[in-house]
Amino acid sequence: MAVVLMADRLCVHSMQGGLVRAGGDQGMVSADGPALGCARSDPRDRFVNYTRYGLYYTPSPGPFATAGASWLGWDIDKGEALGEPDLSLVSRPRRYGFHATLKAPFTLASGTTPQELEDAVSALCAKLSPVVLAGLEVSRLGSFLALTPLGDPSALKVLAARCVTDLDRFRAPLTEAERQRKTKPKMTPQLRQNLERWGYPHAMESFRFHMTLTGPLDRSSRQAAARAAKSHFAPCLPKPFSITSLSLAAEAPDGMFHLIRRFDLVGPA
Image (cartoon, rainbow, N blue to C red; front, side, top):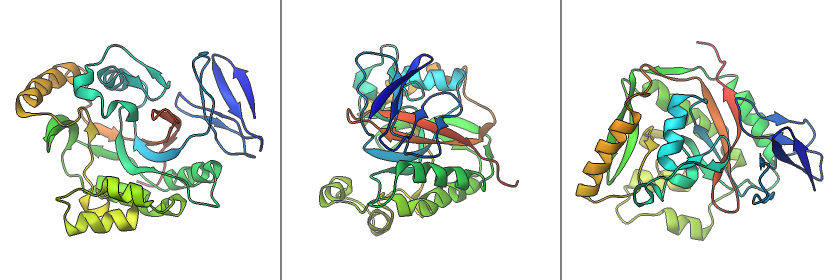
């Protein structure tokens, strides 16, 4: 494996010849090898294989994306820390970056490769159409805060279901440790069924689009965090809110997620 310097980024070149540049609106991938990841030319970086992959919505570069990255303190597009976030609020969601989950992170199934996954995401997004909603608002979901959509979410649920089902052949079965970690005491039968079938409880009928802003908070902390989040995002919340692309993201060995490539939704309206 070789490390290649390209512009202001370092890229990993695999034994099979694969090359990928993360960040920006489109990654660069050769046709003859898996996308193993890259990062800015920082001597602290370690160029090793990603451990899990997920399909997200992440906002394209702009004020909304910057606001989310600065709130969490992690820029998933650039793969770097940003600002001085309040870790008492964001320590749990920070490593995932500013995103909404369409297909939850998974280990690649035996016999599949990152390049094959990327090709499948590209083919899927060529069939899917953009989704437009009225906007986003800061909401409480259980004990944490998130941005949730305004308006009818039915088209969004269809989009998420396609992501879950069409890409499931790339997901390795849950290990027993993963199953135990994801199983919660008060899970409904439907959530348990989703976990067993799709590897994630909040899928299909149980899907709810959200962009997580905090970890679990007590009531007083949650109220203060909600005021701070509303003030932070007020200047840049999109109205209407349009999902015009999906993002393939991957987890580095340190647990932080990085954008691999953003794919435009170019299916028929």
